[in-house]
Length: 133
Image 1 (tube, one colour):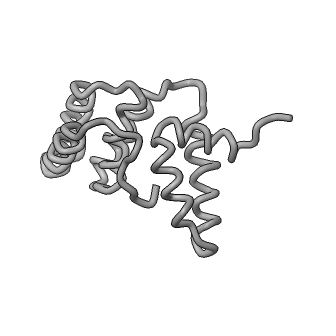
Image 2 (tube, one colour):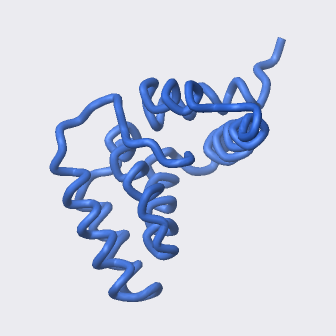
């Protein structure tokens, strides 16, 4: 039997964000947000992140740049920490954030650099902080 998009998404989500993060998210899930959590797992992780045309390192860099440009700091922090699992090097994150400075603005990049310095200074761990996802 073929693996469902949800099952693929759960596998990719665990590989990128870590088991501890996914377990915490599942433990906090209620009937109110269960459909949303299923949607995120199936669409973001099982469809987008599972596509073969970009590697996870590249997807991670794109995600970090977009979140920084939009000022989505909680999700940005999550993906900065997860970058250890995707093979993205700190100097590559800095390069992506320089692009953010030019194309989205210095204040967005300034905030993102501060978050990145804090996130990358912490010791690697399976546990990453818990935003919505």
